[in-house]
Amino acid sequence: MLSVIIPAYNEEKCIKPAYNEVYSLLCAHGIESEFVFVDDGSRDRTYAIINELACEAENVVGLHFSRNFGKEAAISAGLAAANGNCAVVIDCDLQHPSEKIIEMYRLWQQGYEIVEGIKSERGQEKKLHSIGAKAFYSVISRMAGFDMTNSSDFKLLDRKVIDVLNQMPERGFFRAISYWVGYNKTTVEFEVRERVGGESKWSTRGLIKYAISNISSYSTAPMQTVTVLGFVMLFISVVFGIWALIDKIVGRALEGMTTVIIITIFIGSIIMISLGIIGYYIARIYEEIKGRPKYIISSTTKSAKKSQLKQ
Image 1 (tube, rainbow, N blue to C red):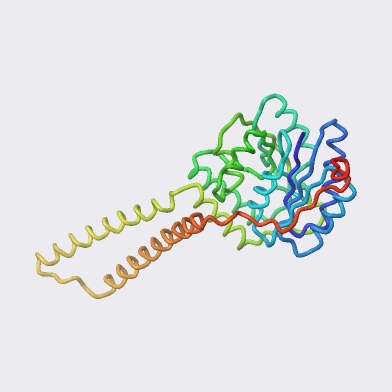
Image 2: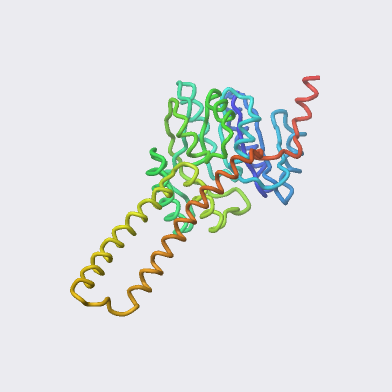
């Protein structure tokens, strides 16, 4: 059985179209499926529509978060609730083309344990967003040590991979952590489609925060920057120290206070940047050691028809 995990946040217009399209496709290819919708604390009728769908269909499970915990938490909850031999994660707005699920499923049948969806075209997104995304994946690929160019959340995972991810307590970046675990992996290229409804929930500020959080989760390179800056300051200090010593020997005082002011400001800036980087990592450690759950499920809905059949 294939579990279809669909995170949703204020996606009331997309729930039923997403289910109808994907389910019809899977039925046409004879693939047994279940659908796990995870409502990430939506403020619209998203969860109400998931409930309605569960009453109409036999293979729908709905999870509702007590508040908005983020897409990564929603994916984690979906993986924890999935009962299939494999699971695919797909966006509710269907920008991930559903027909690619069949290709992924066939590759899984051939023995691949992770099938990654790789963007060949990024669709109709803003130029600045596209440049920022490419820069982010370039940076995180170099820092994490594996190529994540044009990566996405659209991927199919084998049961053994799902079980491993469910055992990991950290708040990981799903796109990166599925690379990190290894296993027999292949890729499928896709072009990003237009949304079936609604609008993107990502803001520029949110994307920047998301990028910084995920880079710090998978690399200590920013921390090494502090060391590099320290050596840079040591080199500058030695140069100016020699300069001042020579001036002292030849009896020539260092001219003016401008140089001193500039150096003081520069050193102060380096120190503040370094403290900021270290402080951010300490904050990440603090979040992890508190041991709070990744998410809180306030309610769960299952297909009424399926429940009657079990009874």
